[in-house]
Image 1 (cartoon, one colour):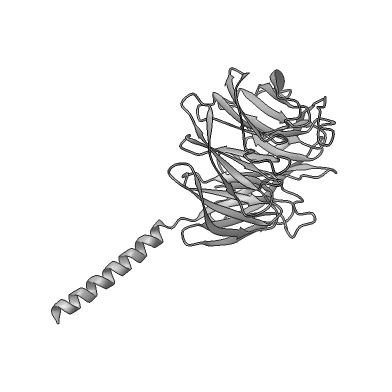
Image 2 (cartoon, one colour):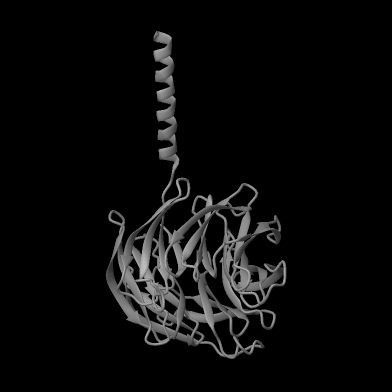
Length: 370
């Protein structure tokens, strides 16, 4: 009888311990998600909680006073969230205070932009930089000591065109990225096939001066880039051809190292979208929309060039933006036209495994983990 009781107690203890271990190991990943609000069910930008281990997700918060908040960015202290309004009319950059306890935002300020159709934003301690797809321009807005946008200080308008008569009759600035040392601002112009490098002076109002540029293959359409961990290599996705350009970057100068591709079979026109490196620096991921709707995985080699590993369908349409979790365990892909986020597990060899989890959210086009 004593032995039987002991066995039952041991079983109960093991069950409770296993349950407790599962509970404490399951992690909630928290994201702000930017969306398009026009012609969709979206109400603004969202804060969501995602737990891939127990397949649970929830919308925690919605900021409703903004139109088409298609791209978001946190400040360095993670207490201010910046958002653009992507419209062809009057466009703004908004700032919101972020409360880490309640996970809510409150309006802090906004500045009217000169550019049309803003689609990407980044920042330094002193300035916000906005890429405007609509008229191929850059906006620069100064920040006060608290990081709130206060004054419009610089406007740069690109010129030129390229060979794609549907997409490249005029400039279309698509991204702004600061170099790792914060000395340079890089911007991709899909309409002209150029990536520009501006020298950045954080103390001046006219803070950007053109320093260098790289001309890509005609009709390629540079869209998004990401830096290697040491900031010496750029990985860039060309939207219109699906090429992945590997570029050495040193003291503001470019040098093309390699051209690869996310096109493994010809099913239609490419529509390369987003590109990110895993936190361990070993793997590169690139999304493709149009007829493909997948994520390509590449291994980053010792010479910084890349080798194709595998390709994975998102099971949705238009994976415009995706995010690799900070711990490198998962990849979340926002399917803009299917209105859900696909959750992949990242395997040890860099390949992706679809967990089967879908996070329902209208028109997800930007995912920012916090």
